[in-house]
Length: 336
Image (cartoon, rainbow, N blue to C red; front, top):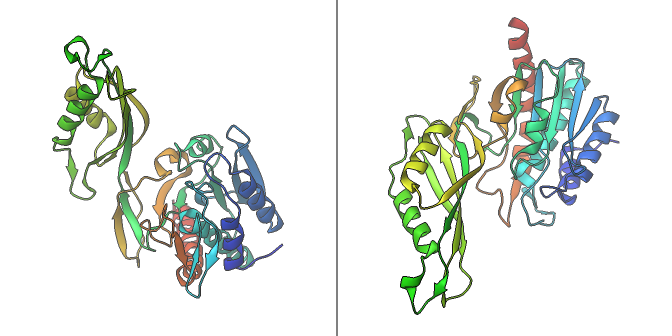
């Protein structure tokens, strides 16, 4: 079994792998990489969702990204310049570039490197959490996300929070007999929006998105419950942001934190245009795989959209970049 990079990318995109349903893509990659001479370890993350760890020798450098995509599935299509479809740049094109880089390294008899493809990055990163328990001696982790082929030197952290306000139901004609949970929640959210959250000289500003609000049962009923889901992109530690949230909200809402990861500063390599990104990756949850490098073809602005795409030219160029990174980082690891 052998495919060129465009054929491999098409095959991966055409196979749906929305978070929670990554098995088909994972097993395809495992079979493909085994046929290329890799030793394969499938790690069940739960719900029959396997991470794929493919190694050649005893890896000191590992290339990694995720097999899952956001919904909904978007069909594969292409033109002369781009391949389109769900996962084109986030991150199935990146998987293809990493796999073809690995093949080129094998052709040159390079050993002691690996590939790690994890599930669930788009939905809480259970794959990365599980993969961090795999025994390894990797010194460097090359993580792939769409960075416009720039070397990222830092990425913001993330904090996801649910706020739940409770009130007392009553007939809307007699509001004094009840207590509006929606009003309490809206007041708390308004106060949060007024906060001047911390900034960092390199990473920029902490941002807050109120992504979901729900509550109440009918317009003529004082609402007894209201819920909001918030996502903060943070540039300081999560503890300090939690303290600000809790002091601002007070007793007006219960707070549940469902995901958090710290900001990350990544390795510098010479010869690259560099960038800082606001999105979060699996890197903070893969600390046992070595010092991180963040790079990938494609733009995060295309990811998660109906017209998600990857440039055929950029995809091909990424193969050589990833192979070169492995060689350079293996030399660094050998030097200690």
